[in-house]
Length: 451
Image (cartoon, rainbow, N blue to C red; front, side, top):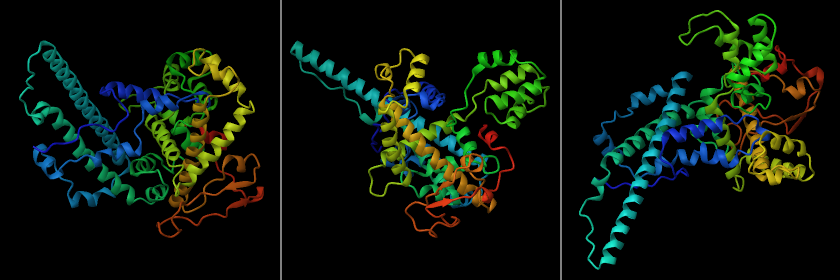
């Protein structure tokens, strides 16, 4: 039997999938982005980067041997030819399966590493005891490959399945114009690009604010929970439909989405709209937890690649923004935010820094990363709109309604224009837009920020 390397590259040292899942969900709950020091927590809790995703490819596994032992059905050329024709819903299932398989592989590897450490410690203790008694220590006669055969089988199974799923994701992304667009930028891998392609729908998300909302990057959105939602609904006067419309306007939600959920049960059957259904709908998390974790991964990728010679425009954007945030923090511009954090969390770990009227270094770094991520997501949405509808997207909110004039360019990366099919012509470096030239969007722009 071929020996395999079983030490995981994951920073997680706890081989408990349930805890890993809870930690990831906890990180996804962090919504009020400007009052959170999520850098360390998210790195430990949700921290699977693109490098970690690719770690399965580095494991020395003989695929043919594993297939024969495990009995996997091969990804035949006929199946590969069907990948590019998958519907988005089906592709999202593939992404979920890939994530679950990665977690299984990391958990099994950590379990094996933990068992090996425990056995070595036990053997060292027995050896020391024998030495103290003055007797010769005899090492147990057992083959290493047979000591954890079942766990090794689980680990090998997960790695083979993960490699196949990675192949499916890579093939789908390479055949999608927006997947190729995202892959231009250093730090963006096939899994992150696949997430963007699979979850962003240009028919629904027609502005950057729409994308920010589903990725949990809209600071105006608040996850109320059951108790606060019930209390808010009881305090309102009016019919259930009127209260639902008021809730959508007050908490920056999309009325159509809230209405569809409130008037259907778990089987999809139509039900009557009641105050209880309104409260239940309002209590829901207003963003996608998986996408919020992915947004953190994107920011981490831009941060790690910032010193590379061919760093993406978004990595440079992160560096420039961080320098600006540090300057503002030193000038005391964030004193009110520091005060708000202390009022909300009196025992905050960074309370010594916050009491000085400044945000912690973790806060500043997280703010800079979120800025770069939001710019990247908006550029992705605008390019996707052009590709899907064949026309320019609606003007951003500051230009369309606030009268701003300067329009930031959608960067095309380091590849010359024309190498990637379907890319639109880049705009000039700075374009001044006159108010009469702006095509007003059909819907009210403030409502576009709703989930």
